[in-house]
Length: 68
Image (cartoon, rainbow, N blue to C red):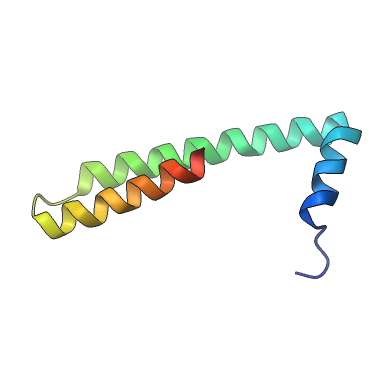
């Protein structure tokens, strides 16, 4: 993705452009909602055998880590 700005460029825009910060904040909020819904689906649909539970726990923990 050569046409995308690097991380420092994004952080500079967040500080420089309030409208970009607002859009970024909204996108992060939507991302958290998405991960929360995925966590609910994973736990609600998980079979009760130990291998499936271990896999679901890893999936949930990963999403929680991504959520911060």
